[in-house]
Length: 614
Image 1 (cartoon, rainbow, N blue to C red):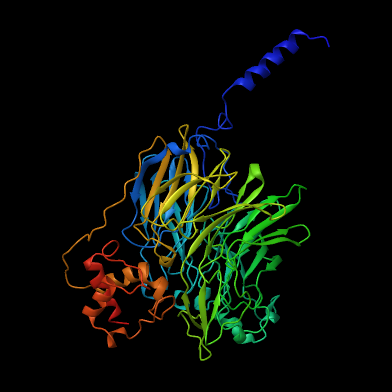
Image 2 (spheres, helix red, strand yellow):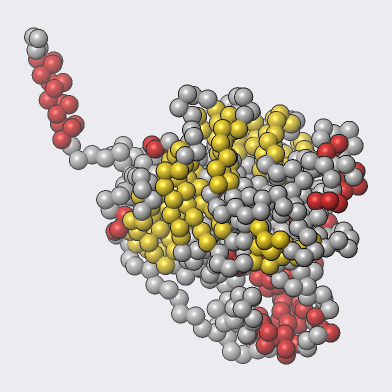
């Protein structure tokens, strides 16, 4: 072979590249954004950054942290846009500097119908064209200026007296904001609606519980049962831009534990529903469970990807403890793989009780699967917490109240898992057991690591190839919301949240706190738990109602009607205020300890005063 000067130059260039210490991170942009709940609206969460990798993850540390609230649910997704992090509490929306934790602005929404709010929780905002969009616990929908935090408009889009609320992060599509109503366990009639981004005007709606001449109405054999059939949506949606399709995870039918009262397939509960994003018309669906009776709904966003043959696939996980993949072109199921312990699937609850696993707070919860693109793997977190379900044959539907149609109690221990599965076959690559249940988002990266955390309060970094932990830090509260990574001025950061109350039973609550980590940060320190204030002014029932909605409603029901915890209606006939105060301060083993780490003496007395009025 004859070598020319060009050949020699090319050879020298190739040798120089080969010997260079450059990594996949070399070409990383100086700044990146995280624009949607799962990074991209296809739901994958994969991020092509490698500054933090398997070789240096041990050098991670805390850059800053911000206590967002003293108490309350903290399950929000986190967005990163132009140097600011955006996230929510039940009523507040915050913008925070993404390198310093400095609060840029805070928008506080005052509930217009606090007395009708059944649960106070929110899972984040959507962003489009300089605006943020979110729902509220009292059935409002609002737009906020992303630069200033100014409220642009607020519209009532649901009925809080019927227990409708809007907790999921909305999704955006070509001038629309798409959002669904939550409250299936209270017996709402679920629906998904699209609103104009400029005005908030409703453009289309789709009922997840069909009635009359709507397709699927005949799957409710007792027509009246569809009036309060459930089918709420608890989490964000996924969108295929090229196909103009929105993928909606639909929750459980109601009453949860009495399938005999609603014979039929109960469409479109426990289903993945695919709608035309422009019109809201049904395109197709896949039902996980027909006439479900164990509250094992689909409550996590699906994820879109291509298999090795180039076919379009959708993957998702359910509270039934399985990970699914469906070929979107043939509509055939490719695999159904257990990612939690399964016991007594499909068994109908009885008045005497049945034990089921993974339990009605188990399986894949609201953050769903992620896609490890370099390894073509689905990464799925799950909860194992078996439960004993007892049906109530004397159940009568009560509008606006928790309508389980029975009772339940949990069987310890509560476990957490992360599985890596081959994205084509579902074959297990690896799995790890965690110190607590897994609920938080999982973020795979080009650095060969993925970021997440558990409800025992551990933030960790996993080797994507093996699942081995390469970094771990105890942060003082369970992780139940977003875990994201981004570039800011040439430096890769990881932001996540800890402290969560609406699923107290999942693990350590802690104070709702935002954390930012990066290479070279300091080792985190945990707050010393003390009573914040030993003095008590006169008890305030209205203040107690707010605390109850933030901390207690998830277990005891929005109006004290009971749920995971006992019914509190009429508790004044059994306990006076002093006894209620003592009960909260020194609870039984079945109730989490909230004093003094979350509730100071004043808050305890306020809640006791509120309970006296139930």
